[in-house]
Amino acid sequence: MTEEKKIDENKQGEALLLESQQGNTRKLYIESYGCQMNFSDSEIVASILAKQGYNTTQHLEEADLVLVNTCSIRDKAEQTVRKRLEKYNAVKRTNPNMKVGVLGCMAERLKSKFLEEEKIVDMVVGPDAYKDLPNLLEEVEAGRDAVNVILSKEETYGDISPVRLGGNGVTAFVSITRGCDNMCTFCVVPFTRGRERSRDPQSILSEVNDLAKKGYKEITLLGQNVDSYLWYGGGLKKDFKNASEIQRATATNFANLLDMVAMAQPHMRIRFSTSNPQDMTEDVLHSMARHKNICNYIHLPVQSGSTRILKEMNRQHTREEYMALIDKIREIIPDCAISQDMITGFPTETEEDHRDTLSLMEYVKYDFGFMFMYSERPGTMAARKLEDDIPLEVKKRRLTEIVDLQQQHSAYRTKQFVGQTLEVLIEKESKKSDQHWSGRTQYNTVAVFPKENYKVGDLVMVKVDDCTSATLLGNAINYSEAI
Image (cartoon, rainbow, N blue to C red; front, side, top):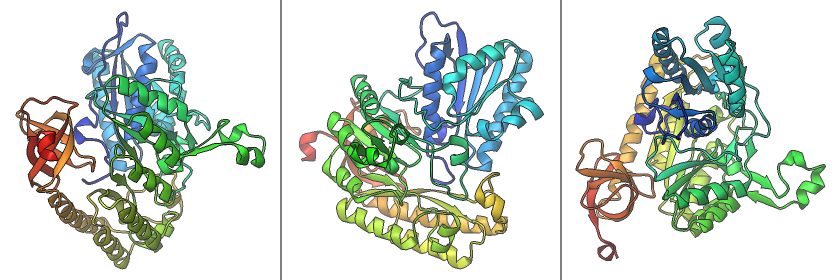
């Protein structure tokens, strides 16, 4: 998998749909782009707007309100959203009562361009301002532009029960943190999503328990850096008067939270994303090993295999520290699948730095990865202080070498499963055949097998007979045969 996408490509930009509520008369068309957090946020937005009389629609032309939840992490993502805004406005010319709004990271970064210079939207709402949507809609209805991109040090939306948009009723995201305190020089997230804050663990458990009651089989605990999750017994750090009060308070870290969630719902699969190498501690790995329902899969972005480049990126780990963490994962969870994020062509990157990345990949042999060329993001430290000095043709060549190597490693990892019997959670019909189911193993590997008598949401034991570089192929067997 290339580029920054961590969501099924078919879901990128898909109009989200939920069950209509009786009495709601207005129609909302909402699309999401980018990371899992944006899709999770769209569920929060839909919940807020449902109480304002909006039902969702998948037909743009009939919408009263059109919202696009945006991503700013790469230039390509921004260009995709701009093309969609052009489409919205073409429809708006035939339906002048339709209102258009931009949500999320692009909204915060480009608010003045959207509203004042280009005049292509009616409303701009940052990721911490979704509770203000009712007031902003009143401004729009009165014929005024509406904007709120104020970043919060407190908002977690822990008190809002998200509606589950366009999902399969089987898997769901549960947000545990918002924002980011790591100032990686290439990244806009601290500027578009604000400072990091953790959500009350009891509200997380309540949401997980509610999902279990509704029949969900798997949840992903979500945050920019889940391993830095930290909640003090009396609230957030700001709620305490001094350091001694904080020290006396009972703290819940990410390992504790994993234990709590896994024990609360022992029959529900637990995943999490994303981990930061500098924050992942050994107790998290022991929590994973302790609970069978926590999936043996870690997404562990490295960004570069060169310690020099990591320092330029302001990553708080070295190549050697990252490799030591990989060794610790292999020791505590021997069969754990690991994936990566990788940036190539970062300013000043030499061929030696590039070879360091390739050699790190050889050391880890990731199961899969998300790889992309560096693109300068306005406002970041890299854009302010470093010249984007790597020629495009060099970036492309290095990216090709990284992708090719990852494909080799993905094929290697996938082949290890041939002959094994694995538990697969059925998520949907196979893209290529309506006679086959598609699901995922605990290792996040996709498996395809004949439908027979199963249904979406079933956990099925599948004997793996063959594979492609990214997909397992097999047949379902009963549990007695699997023993």
